[in-house]
Length: 387
Image (cartoon, rainbow, N blue to C red):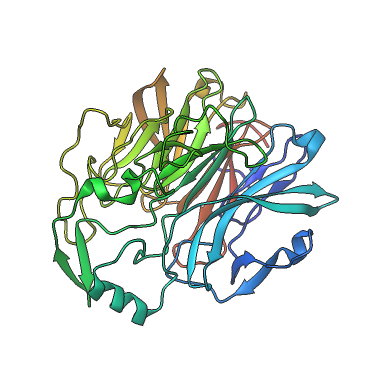
């Protein structure tokens, strides 16, 4: 059952040993880094006009595994670059002391490029053929954060909606034949569509799979992703699970392995939005990973949690995935890396932005509305059990 509503917000992290919840909220303005800020949270952000067509703002938040002793808090956000007309995915950390975030510093800035977008600029770029590295839409940032048991930080970065399969001029879909292998998600020289692995201070680990390879970014752990908005380590197996948005159809659940290519946009199960045009050359290819589970039609996956608590003992080890467009919460039972069954638990409650397990063993959902109106953080409780 659904317990009483808590605090509003799109994504959240429940602070261990405390009843308090830390929730990054998308404000009426898009945050950006102040060039000469002091090291306190209040002066870390400055207001800029919101880019309504983007998916930007504050993206995710996670506590360091040793948070109780070092107080480090990590968050990802959209960072303005260049002359302020482009954005990229960034990760920063700060120490939470007396309800104030201090010693804030960026530890990762993705090398992706996308226009935040003026209509005139978009039109010109349409006519010029979307010259690389410019991208039409300022979206698909990722970004989810997860620590493993060794203290490494994993970060998802989206493909930034780099166009493939069609171009749109004045609302008309214009088909073209592109080189799928030339898409930046298949190029290790940038951070489009990747999972990144870093030390907790942002340094690149020496044993990352692409360290020392000419032209490749050493921070990359895996590539060929589209837009992963769910990331979690399985507490029993240590496997790293991620869900990612497909295009129109073809949302995926993957086990993320070092050095592997997850195929976007060469292989997949979706089609282009609106036009329904084929994108991929197929669904399988040697040297490219296939998903462990699919959603066709898409549910617009967002948020991923693997349950370990005591409130729902029959659900231990199950994977929970939220759906934005599908407005649902799915529970998946797994055996190792095989998905055995999917059960939609809730539908049409609103857009499920995130799902987390609290220190109390209950399941918490961050729900957002499609019209931007205030929503609640809700708690799932076992049926028949009192509050």
